[in-house]
Image (cartoon, rainbow, N blue to C red; front, top):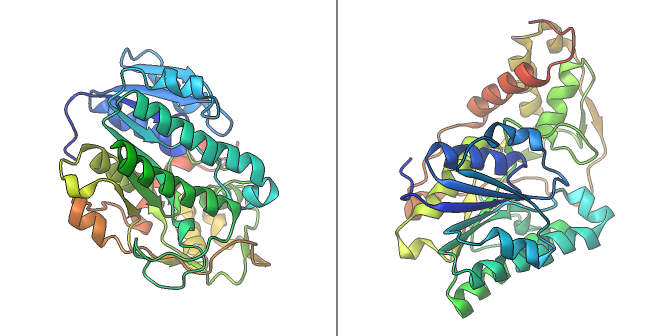
Length: 333
């Protein structure tokens, strides 16, 4: 991937799953990286290999605190805003905190970036913005009504970004992430994403529980495709490609049943008994959409996006990482 000339880049939520992978990439390209994180969902272990790198700065702070945002953007050329409280169920349980972080924190970051004359503000948007729209594939200009507080917050982010572009001239690019997975995605906690959670359960020979009949489908997107999109959004010189939003996905859908079968197949290479683990089915989850599939034509056309990893290719990479780093004690080699 072609990247921009040497730059100072702020990555909010840089100790999280996606943020830490972005830190890895931009440091490897020789850029200066500032990571802002409060470690609510991120982990120091994700970035500790950068602590001795003179190009890396960690600021422990909270995007809900405007002063922390102002400190973090000092001298920064670009912002990659990943900090948020994810999870639809978490937002249903606690909409106030989700709103404080995802809307209040977002507005703080936009304001701080504007005041610091940041060149471009690239932010994590969400496929949840499509809400109850049944149109497939999802195209950026057709959305429905949000189905959760989380989805509302991510849509409000897009509205605020658009206003800051129009009113203050701040260049913004929103990336609507579709079910991102890969190395360092946290398998623990009440709101763990489905793939790492299922991987850990299968490695322990515990039966994963699929919500519904397993025929719901998602456009699962490997982390390296997401890193590519962030780089393209940050570095594009095409003025027609900014101040808009893009689907960030692979452009194919996989059912939950198919996804679990992939996991069992790939994990069985390490432990053949995993193939025998039964799958359990439970009720549908509140706020979930049945099917999700992205059109990535806009990203291909305006940014030159060319996702390198299919669902299957990415899952094989992810499974190898989880087995190497998180396999149960005493598991087969």
